[in-house]
Length: 204
Image 1 (cartoon, rainbow, N blue to C red):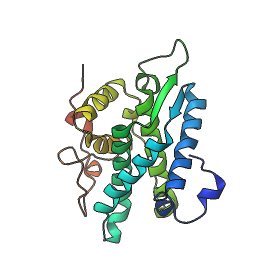
Image 2 (image 1 turned 135 degrees about the horizontal axis):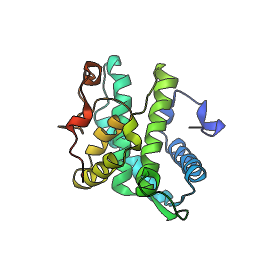
Image 3 (image 1 turned 60 degrees about the vertical axis):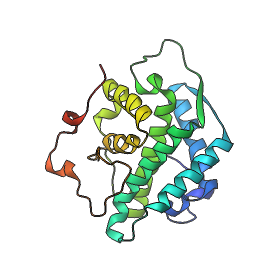
């Protein structure tokens, strides 16, 4: 994700992201990029977007780890918290979609959800790369229709599952049981070869 020049070099990205001005500018930049890429057009309520930020920052600080070893893992968790909050408040609304689109594709099946997921994954990747020299490798499930059906239905029932699904889309092993709680020193089970798709209950 390309960020406005005046915002990208102020301080480490993980700290910049905790500023309202940075957050709004970054989100609006994502809206423009997603619109250009998909043809979708969105309206964004800045007042609601500010509420998203305040709620997210409160949740972020509530579980912020003290161990330096936990900080890279907390990046993913914090991005999941952001996705949960965006879905909860719904600051963006799709107001136009191109004709004759393939509605099986996530961008058109759930245009707002696609925008939120893309934003959170991009910020997640940016922080990992800029601040921790890490790399995010998105899962093929990011484009899987059945996964998105499951995602949309499950977060409607339990918004905290957005945290687990973002891990899934980012290629990490999700915590499905208590996704809203950050576990210090948590091992990434994906490294042990666990097949995440076997744990999902897809919607037919």
